[in-house]
Image (cartoon, rainbow, N blue to C red; front, side, top):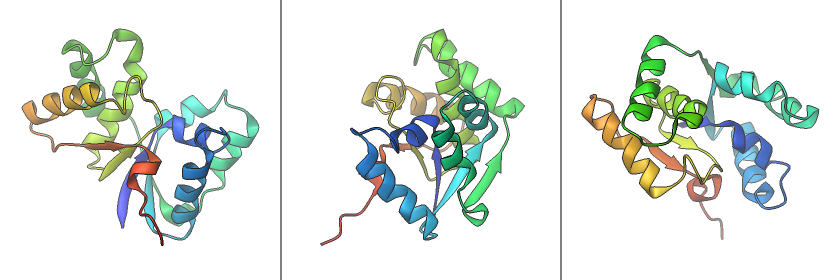
Length: 152
């Protein structure tokens, strides 16, 4: 079973007409036990001001499919290094923290709908250059659509 880290955009994507099809398929597979979600304290923080239906989606996921991780010194240091290396600008600190948490907890894939700061070939190369330099594994970063298998 793949351990996938979901950033906050995936929860919002469940209710967004542009992203809902693939996001709902992903969450169905999570509920069936096909994926284990790595859920971070940062996601909790970011979902606090979200609409109730988005918060409820996160809160009602089966507990046996969740692995909770907190923000650690290692993740904060790694996120700062992404910023120091100009992978993204200083205003993208939270995005860097999502990448760092997924990297440090050894997620198989980070899943996001954030094309500007996360699922972007130049950003992915930048994050992974820092990861490689610091001895972390290369992190797969994909959209929900990219990780789902097509069924005939």
